[in-house]
Length: 147
Image (tube, rainbow, N blue to C red; front, side, top):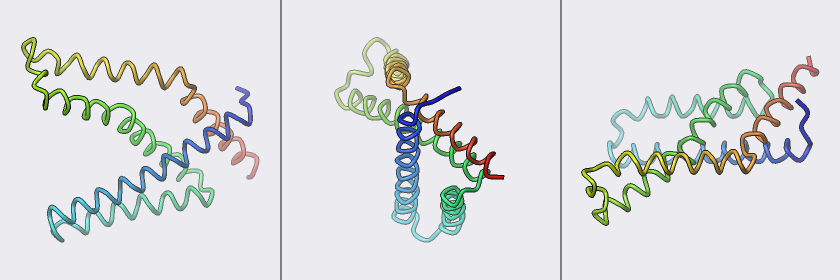
């Protein structure tokens, strides 16, 4: 597939933004764990967060395996940011307004389906996925020619 340089640049910006969000999520998880549990179980969090941060470092140094692992981690970040976070926020708002218990609790299922469908349509209509795919293919092509 041929992609334009604009798509590759947008994809690179999206991936870089995703890595920043991933780092911020790791720091937030570490902070919340430290506040809620103290130092109990902190070594596991430090080890896992350290491995992820080392993987991101290797990705920026040009490691192909680290790139694939980072793209896998970023897919989870994108699912969280675009799918689960809006659902969680809207369900929290509706629960606070006592609207969710109407219709026998069916809104617990209907509202997430509507939000995830709307977000999926929005992501595919804006070309978000194609831009990331263009960057991924460009990165793979550069890595293959570098050997």
